[in-house]
Length: 191
Ligand SMILES: [Zn+2]
Image (cartoon, rainbow, N blue to C red; front, top):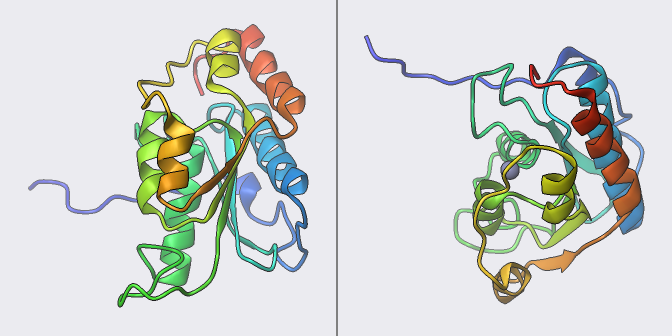
């Protein structure tokens, strides 16, 4: 019998780690939450040094994500894809900002501790978000860790902007880099 289902979970510590009733106004607060999740993930040894979160137009959290690749034997279980998939499941929409008829149903923001890799870049194009907030750059990830971020279009921010996704980079970049550096210098490869 071939496998017919797939299940992905956030680590235990992620349950209740943030108050869903609070708001996260401003770009920096959103990215700092993603960075905090990335730090917690390596401290708990529950995945790689990456965190992400999806917010609605009222600055409320819709879903969070952390890297779960090695614990869950799943190469697509990056922080951004985890957050996007959980948000889509929660809202019951494949495109967060459109209903089945393609009509707008709100604006959504994805905040991530580091620039999306080639996989998450593609996922971002189809996920139905309106803004992408980024902490560390891919160059930081590749300089501070052994991760390969993969090939991207030369003008990757422009390609997103042309699809209606505003890109804001270098938000709390130093704090994001501190987590990457901590992971990179730890020699950890088992999570
Ligand atoms: Zn990724």
